[in-house]
Figure (cartoon, rainbow, N blue to C red):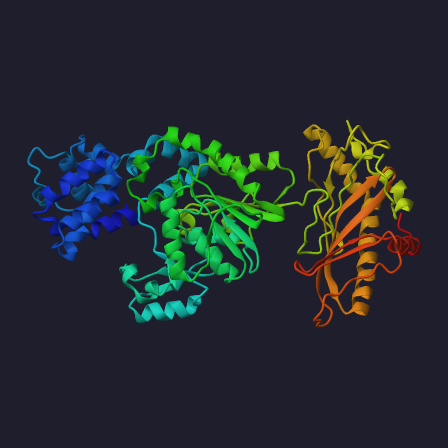
Length: 611
């Protein structure tokens, strides 16, 4: 059957191997004993620099071919001898005539008898049993298609460095250098090479830092971070920096980008690549970031086609150790995410144990995390996660999950959307507090009770501060799903019932919605009079319950109403309990609701008949 992986073997100029078999066989033997095939080939070619192009091709394919197909070759040859395996590679897989194959490899009679391809995926496509089991469990009927796909080299994909050039302009420049490309199917800066593979490092475009070689799936992972100009972004497991440089391009040279990796040599190479790309990357991790990427160590099953012998250097026992490490790295990454910031978890493996199970475990332990669905075509998304497959998308196998961390209670942070976030909280009633929303105290009773109901619903606070947090998000005029931000200490079934009842308690939601609109309009009028920052979007970041009353904190993301060249101070307008704070550096205004605003809210409630 003419699969791509076998078809390319049949196109190799095997006649060029004539007289070189004794040069090749020692390298083949070392690869079969566990040496890295790429290193053996590099050593061999350096020692024989006079080889012609066709000879170099035949030597490389001989070493790689036996290294990759060793299990199938052993089934055909009924032997582990490197010479016999090379003979079977030429005769049975590359369709070289038997006599010619024997002459090229120096194998004398008796020659191994011909046999049909083995039926098992592991033997037919040359995999260890445990990897075959992973393929079957993950894909079932499509397992063989995946196995065949990772036996052929992947395409060479480039990423245009948006700091210096656009994708279309890069394609035209490469064409003038003799390299033909096509746009990637999914990643915005991807170009896939369609011509013969040149020496990329010798291209002028590479020396000028106009592109990086990067798989399209890897580019999509960086794209999922949604790094924006002006943000602080951390790549916690940066490696040599492929995704780091993609993040730098997305940020447009504005903001702060940090990279960290335990391997100092990789960080050194990252710094060199960043200089060539014109990117500014700090080495470090001591930061609270708007977005954190954790591209964690994994079993790398998604990149098998990049290293033909990798499948035989991996072992199941090592793969089993990765989930615990990945959970630890992910927890460490979360500590670097600012309130309201984003966290992206990524691997280049296919195992559910390292992908979905790690992501779901993080969600169970941190209910303040809201999963963000990838803004990508549906064929790249499975169960709300990014999933790419070599046999479906012609890119390496990547997994990625993205979350937004909800701001904890009492922390001030800027919201970049008009979502309304409301949290109900029980605190120590002994603390004195002047509450402008005392008239709304009856609304607390509208929250439903459940088994072992959250203490927020009680009339008297417990000993010491205690809290149960619920987020009510609203976009536009339609309500969005209610989610629990912090554990309520309820069994799962009871928690679902409590939430179901809470979603029906629209009185609280409507009250908060009206409050936001009233305060928002009030602040816009003040901004116009003062010539200062006018609110563009606003969000109620939390609601406090002191005794039987409510207190709102509102954050506004502002834009100038008109150009000003001085620091404008917002006055309280005579309301002694008002607290207006202008933070020009973050372009946000934090307003604690004042008594005058509360009266305006009550007036609106009466007019609209809001309960």
